[in-house]
Length: 193
Ligand SMILES: [Ca+2]
Image 1: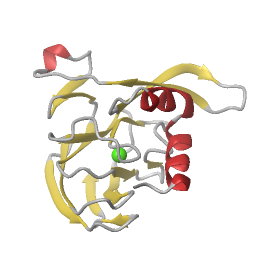
Image 2: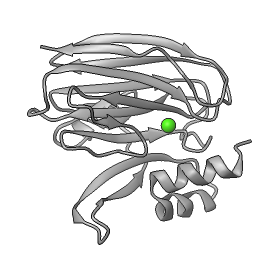
Image 3: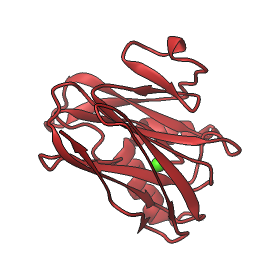
Image 4: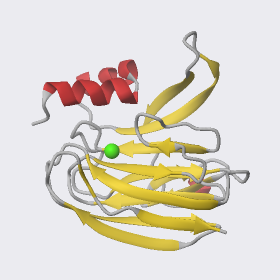
């Protein structure tokens, strides 16, 4: 079980109201972040959360999206698409050459977005299927050294993962994170020249 304090912090980080509403319905959620125009009163860029954006081919997704493991994900000059099967809350972390750190608590930065997050607070969208998380960057994103890694947020299970890097750089990364709360996998480096 997730500790209440962890659950709370994750929900607050992901955007409280929509996620709580979904969970109280007994549903299992895949979180889709969509940035809204404008800023909230406190100066933060506001964002909305939707659930379930399934596909079998890219034509079923929106413009500038790809179909990755049955989920519509954002694309651009570069994307990092994480997939794993174990029912544990893996989180994708990406840092950019300019030092931005994209992850669930910071889903939007100047050039990049985290647009899909699964297994939030141990609730995976598809308990028997592949789980997906995605970060993508637009064309004017800075070239240079990106780092990408995976954290086992709640550590429910050991998890093998794969990260497909697609765009200006094409690589397939893989690794394993142990069943330890907060355990991180290796930091993979990607150079966009
Ligand atoms: Ca996650």
